Length: 169
Image 1 (cartoon, rainbow, N blue to C red):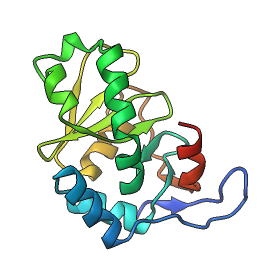
Image 2 (image 1 turned 45 degrees about the vertical axis):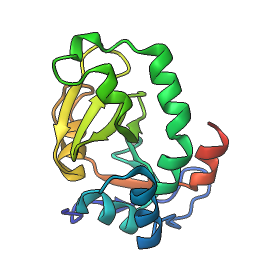
Image 3 (image 1 turned 30 degrees about the vertical axis):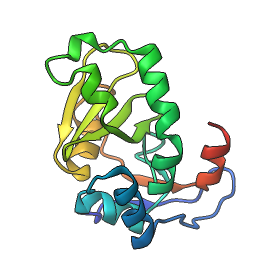
Image 4 (image 1 turned 120 degrees about the vertical axis):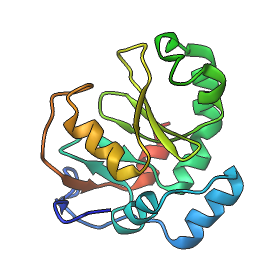
């Protein structure tokens, strides 16, 4: 993954740039628990940047622990509130329920991973989008395609403590 244009900025509330990253053991434990293998981009991202928001408050990639701890609640919500029938040619409801949620956007779009492919479940659309084979492709698609939000080039990363996110869910 090319991190050359990513800039760490202070957290809005704490004014600190402390990073909350994952280590190799966290990633391996998540992979074993969920019987998946993350792409190298994901691994590098969570080990280099970790928990935070990229692109000026737009993309949030979850740490492995967050993925595991929120997966059941997420699948229950998707089961109850499924509305992506226009995207059934991309993924069926059953396929989505066999995926894992690896992140989201400020707008509430959800980033999922299934069979080494990233997809986006938009909050305000019944379509499902294939976003990439690697996390970097997916971030680029989210920030630059103009499909879900106006395209932007900013790649600032604002770190935040993941326990705050987990306590709010």
